[in-house]
Length: 304
Image (tube, rainbow, N blue to C red):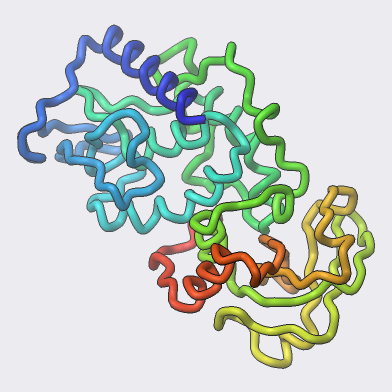
């Protein structure tokens, strides 16, 4: 994954540099490289270092970014707040170019002219990742409306190397909330994209149109305070959106406890994650302690 991203960024640098005869600014102060750009007008822009806590884009292949960015975020605080919501999607590995696409907008590389992603590249990522987002009750947001971006045949833009095969062989999400094991860091990110986390056993499941209805055994326990009150917790029924036929081995095991995460979408609670509850595992015990005290980034919902 990292090798593919690094290569994609190198190819982007070559393409943009040759086309624009541009230069990457020196490592001087963030105010040493100012110019104007904006699709809707002119904004005074500058280069600044990509901070380590901008997890979406730190280490992607370049070290300096434009502010304001191509989403018109004017401060690093705003960029970090908004970008953090996208980290769980990148971890889902729905497309090899997801991170490159997002960072081209959230943290555009410093060049003498800002370069947008190509419409075809955006569509490729959208088509691969939209089903993942829909499983969690989100839709592809208007801010990433691919029709707003240029065609690669007509205008210079950031393209995806179509000779690369999307990483289906490495990871093909079959049932997004339960299709793979996640590291503690990723589970915490997933929890922050959810509204509640509980400990429960599965009672049974059944198909309901295109969804899978998940009924839990009576005894449940909140792992972290969230959007559920006691009455809602007792009556809780979960759904896998568009998951009527998706494989989820965890749901077939009624004897184990699971760490289950979810969020309220409309009048339903969607399952956003399910992980084996293993208190004998030291790493899992550490994770439980982190969950109780972990402070999620303050951010606005951007999957609108």
